[in-house]
Image (cartoon, rainbow, N blue to C red):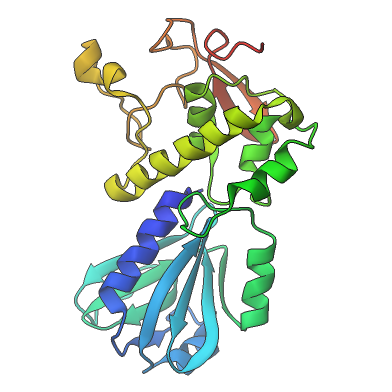
Length: 270
């Protein structure tokens, strides 16, 4: 599933391409046809991301299109209009360029109260200027659940996925199975600050890079990481390989249905 930086990058691309323009919208697949027809010919105001959700607004209605890509969704912007429809396109936007949404978990036109209901169940998003990290801390410091699980809970923290979860725990030397209530406030503040910086880099580069300069391939004389997620990381999908810091083999275990990666030496529970 795309992590938060991908959705913020998508919202920025949609806004840059269509904001202030009158757009044509349709649903070649048919599952969003009535809603697309209502929006057809309106001026797009822009798109905004919150966690792993994108909300697209228009000038002719207070309703917004809510998009959640889920595991398989894609939203691709291509130059030109009148392009052939390829695959099951749930929603198409056209105005100088064509944006095709395929396979989303959600594509729905929501009223303001319905949008508020979604936002109310999400934790703070490190990529938003209005985010309040204290909201996440309020849940973390009272919980017996592991910090690794809490970081993936969108009600606690919005937008953080499996890669950022593993990497920020490594960078902050936190054992993943530590109960939330045993994480010191100073450590949580450092984790939040790190997530803000790392995810902003993700928005800028379009990939996740988490290693510090001294652990880059050039600095260490090693080959760049080859993985379809791209980017240089410390532990994610590196199980069995040597830790870049201490040479201990990286470990993996399944937690709540997702693979968790960590270094047992660098992240030793104190």
